[in-house]
Length: 329
Image (cartoon, rainbow, N blue to C red; front, top):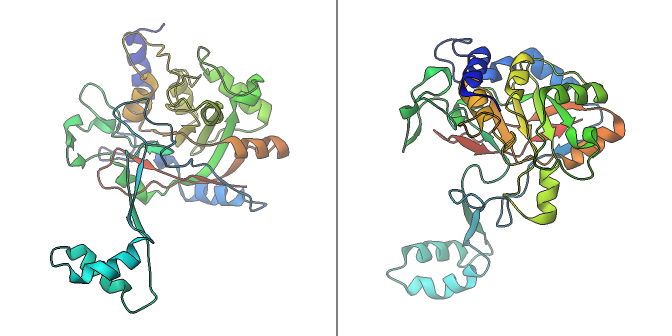
């Protein structure tokens, strides 16, 4: 078990504060330049498309954490409304909405449906913004933590990412296949930096500056089978933050609920890799990515690199965003 002194030493080593200027709010996404985007596009050889996002619905992975719930999908106008509204609403003096809708439906064949969704922005496949996690009252690059208010994040919000778009080379590291596990990596055996290197060597792929590294643990397939959104499984050991820093990756994503291993590895801390990545490095984390179909294809053709397109929603001041990442080979 590492100490807080060990943690602080690593935090100093991986810090990117000031690397791209004192006003920077993009962090390691700065590694994605025009040449990187062009390289990613050149990886598309067959036109095979893999959607890495999961369903946003009532059967999603949330609920184990009481402060996050699964999405609530509500129909605001549906097919059953049309005939009823035309029949009753014109006579209503008090139902202004009904009168307006009945005007759309009356004396013409036009009909429509409308809906809305209520959910945490991190309910399923998502990006953590740099403002999502902090410690000692500071966000990435030294911005004050109290700049995140009830009105949103004034600094390091997910809306700041839109200028980059997050289109780059993606690399899959399939730790399930590397370990020879049948389904998923069970809790109690964190993924180490040496193991990431070994998986890359076995797969014949190199990690390069500006990549997004996608780590398959098998957790999402396990969730679809068992339905337990709180079931722990192996994730990245906290020391993998140094590995990500040394390889100058743009971001990291995984198919599990927190990317890193639920075993802290640092006394007196919870999710130390979140702190090192988001707050010190300025490196975003992607969670709940479905990597199963992509992993099967990579194993079949031996190609573990691809173009990745994964822009977040531009929600002003948000500390996270839903995403449907697309891998193209």
